[in-house]
Length: 189
Image (cartoon, rainbow, N blue to C red; front, top):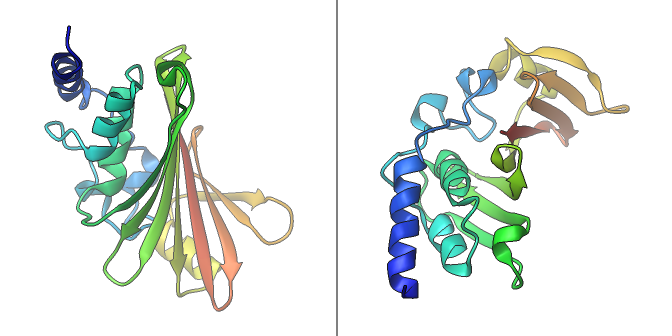
């Protein structure tokens, strides 16, 4: 089978599977996300095979293609001109960790997001993503205004507050100058 036909079949399979699992959790149902995009507008588009997924499949990372597409669509929904840097291994990419870093333009700033995917997990492909955003308000205000339903579970050591978004989701709030940096981390199974 030619590489082009194989790629077409792989992308068709991804298209069919991309809407099976949504990474949305209780944290996404908050008023605003750390990146400032409403959760309701950030659901993955079932019909869109994004450039990140296409590049991963072309490089041979097939096992996690559906998960890559799901998370990349979720993180970049509604954003134009997303900057992307991919970490693909040249040897056996379908059996190796795949990672991507993104700069996601927002209305008045940019957010950083990274996502990593591991094939051959109990569910076929495990994943994790992080989003990092700066907010021009104190962390205590941010916690109450934007993440009010999440419980503060303590600090990592001294300055970074941890909010509980469920078993697989945590939000870290770190003071930065006069504002706050939020770091949302979620594992996807």
